[in-house]
Image (cartoon, rainbow, N blue to C red):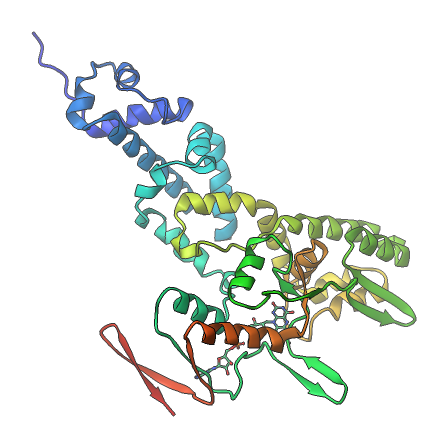
Length: 381
Ligand SMILES: Cc1cc2nc3c(=O)[nH]c(=O)nc-3n(C[C@H](O)[C@H](O)[C@H](O)COP(=O)(O)OP(=O)(O)OC[C@H]3O[C@@H](n4cnc5c(N)ncnc54)[C@H](O)[C@@H]3O)c2cc1C
């Protein structure tokens, strides 16, 4: 009698993976895997304590396959490349994608975060995702049971988020648009948690800004159709670029600021899910990130539209993303102005922080940090 053929753990996982690729993980049975392998069920129970363990190994293989795809350089833009890789995974492994990404499942709980770390590291470096203010960070730390102290070198908290009164006017130093004013969105809930928008009325201006140029008035209306038709009326010869621009602004309406779980704690599949939600947004950002505001403005034939676009931002080297992103959230109803403006917003967050037991010391500049073990000993001027 010939010796019994031995099957390795890897061979079994590979066969099970091929089956799961077509039929999904949940349907796997020892019998089905054995048939695929061309063996009895014995090697499966020799290598795995039960079918659950095998299913887990198959899920891990899927994670690894997806991670390898994500590492491939396709366009040179990592954000876009990861998005493309996730679409490719969904297409080539649709049964696995449906089970592991779209449906709630147990495999994620045991998922080794190390697998996604490299990618997460790169994505968490995205500047647009690093928008937490000092007050917000203090509030989160305080809410999680840490004893915290905010040292502020200025005499007032708030940093750039400030404003001041002159005669009968209030001059706002910052907020033209605050993303997250729309009720029911996750970012709005976050603002409420930190006290920034708790019980605050929101002013929804009809127009983001208005520019007058040689008797022609250009409105950046909240109503995107109105914005488009008013611009077309000003300059029918700019029809193509106006329509294209408005179409791209509309794509940003699906944008949702990621809150809840910080990006550096998301595993690769949660990341992929996020990429799916962001796929239109990523393409628009990519398109406009390479064009400067001035170059884009010069494409318009009408001088009033050229002036309006080019004066959207102060002088500086900005890409069109800095124009289209605010317009996307504004016309999508996601951003507006909280009553009281920037300073009141910063003060509300300060109050919330203090009410949670946090400590604030103003006029205290940190000039260096001495770190001993896990403790920070500060040097203060
Ligand atoms: C003109 C303008 C318009 C803007 N418009 C908008 C808008 O419409 N919508 C929007 O969402 N965002 C807008 N922003 C951006 C927004 O204001 C900032 O992204 C946000 O306020 C940054 O918060 P922060 O806490 O990270 O930093 P900052 O506000 O810069 O706060 C940093 C704080 O650290 C303190 N500090 C620095 N060094 C030390 C030290 N060594 N020791 C102690 N304290 C120190 C500073 O005094 C400051 O108070 C605008 C910004 C500007 C300038």
